[in-house]
Length: 505
Ligand SMILES: O=C(O)[C@H](O)COP(=O)(O)O
Ligand SMILES: [Mn+2]
Ligand SMILES: [Mn+2]
Image 1 (cartoon, rainbow, N blue to C red):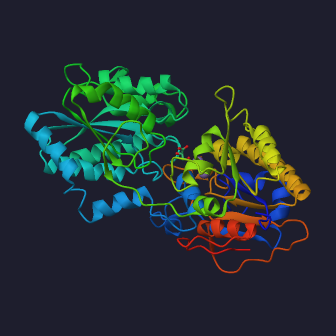
Image 2: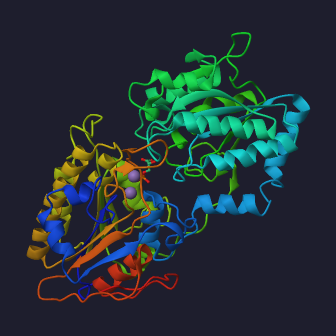
């Protein structure tokens, strides 16, 4: 172990690169430390979106695939891509489990319930996949398809929900089957903070038809004073005034999100109530639910990366993040392995109360910084890995001024941690996992509007060498797949055989 050169890997969540200009909150922020680091020869831009990380070409990056690839040291085909492949090669249509469930409905006259995020944000779901599922339902002559449309406003510009609902209705009309039965903001349906009250509101609209009754899906949008994300559960009623959608015994529920983290709380809640009533559950992609929900498309293996290599070499690491990003520096960075390796320590920093990120853009960065500093001062910890969440989490609010402050808090934290690194003889490697705050305006849709979503921009990656060492400018194109080999090389270790990325410094 004595040969290992200790360091700190800091993932600055949502730290993308774009030229200074209107809507670039990172360029607008006063960040002397980051500016200084980015001006050193050891700074590069790394690809963090599209096929460079295992997404479809041109697709924005996200925290899951970003951290998976940072850990794996190679692009990993993401769940969205695997779903897309099954649609394109026709194998989703001939999927045995799906076929059996739909044939059953044709025989019993039951309903198929499609539950998922209704947008084309490509982070949790793509409404295009719903189109294929409606077509498949029509092929199997499923008598009734009820769509439980979750409105977005986070991965896509706020105020676009009406457009996406109209798209869904168009797909249903084209397939000749399907109607929107509930409209629920993702704040309720996709909570991942463990606030079961929010999940309950969403679940009751789906199971009991409890919510604001509306004659048409778009009418539900008026219930939110806080944008598409917080549309209150709305229940579409039929000609008889009764809700269209409640799930009945023997129906089939199919979740259409391909990403698990935000749908799993709702999936577990619905399964708990309905599985005992003969309702069949399926999910488009594999979920990390407690409930045993069969997936139509299985995940790619993301193992054999940094965590496995550290374990093999007996290197202890401490992982630190705020609750929002805790799984990212643990589970995802480790290639979606549920159990931490024996030499890993995990520190999850949680806020005392649900924060309002617009008014508290500092989040809990002070406590994260302290925890990283303490871990860095330990001689028995060669590698400290932390996620600084502010830029992404506050960026998602679409609030430019708050995001500027988030970047400034991040800058001060980085400065403090570089100081600790100097005192403890550590190198520091900083990298973004995808873009976000460098683009806070969009022209998509009708006119210019605030945008809190992710981007396809490259991310900065910069090495602050340990005292007395020099970093040379890396050549060629860098990607997130280069981070794990770089971390291992900085520690003085070789890469894992499965890694295709290269050490940048
Ligand atoms: O779930 C979210 O918060 C956003 O849709 C995506 O953000 P993330 O990929 O950074 O988690
Ligand atoms: Mn992220
Ligand atoms: Mn994000």
